[in-house]
Amino acid sequence: MTEKYTLIDNPDKPQYEFHLAGENPRLEYIKAQDKIYLTHTEVPQAFSGKGVGSALIGAALEDIDRQGLTLVPLCPFVALYLKRNPEWKRLVLKGINIA
Image 1: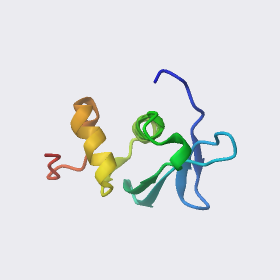
Image 2: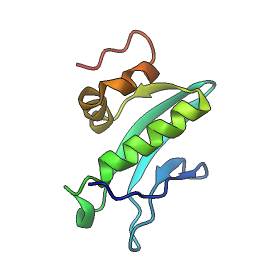
Image 3: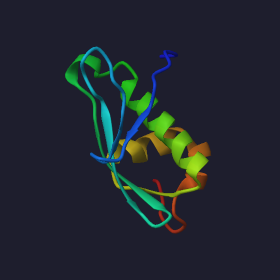
Image 4: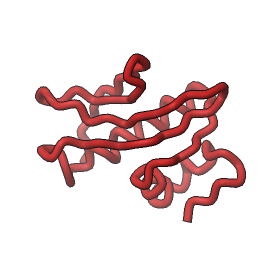
C-alpha cells in the first residue's frame, strides 16, 4: 500500500497513531532516557490486512531515527517488521537479536 498517512506522536497516551475514518491505529511506547520501547501495535479490524500497521511502524521508525533514540522492540509485530525491513535494525539496542 503506497497511501501516505500522517503520523501523530501522542505523548499523553503515550503512543504513535494515525487518525483514519474515525479509527485510531496505534503503536504504544515507553520512552526512558535515550531509549524507546515499542510495546504494542493495535490496528482496528476495518484496516486489518491493508498495510496500515506496517505503515504505522515505518513512520514511527522514521520519527525514532530523527530523534536519535535507541529502539527496544518488545512488540512481536514490530520485530517481524524489522525482520522484513533489516535496514531499520541499525536503530535496535545492541545485543538484541531479531531472529
